[in-house]
Length: 126
Image (cartoon, rainbow, N blue to C red):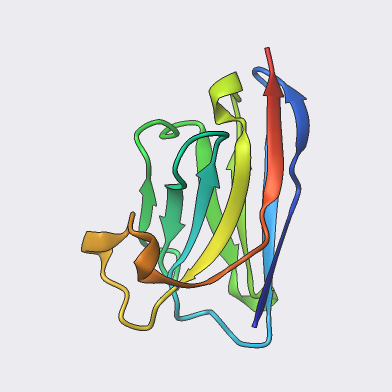
């Protein structure tokens, strides 16, 4: 199983990026998928998560209204549209697949996720 994240880059504050995560080796259409990020010197945190059908989404308070998570099960992929970027959004962004036993109560907990991508760097300049 592999998750390949892409789409990161250097962008000015107020700009936008679209992150992509392509999964291979398995079909993840029935699994929750999430995006985490880790800023320098900080712990990794959940940014957004989406259910297998896309009918349920979760966003961290810090990104609500600016980030949008979506998925295309036909392409085994999940996306994160990030807009109105701020310097504090600078981080490595990781995609992850929820466990079979995923529980939305623990949506923010890393142990609720099985597989992780390698990360894509997002840098926001002021």
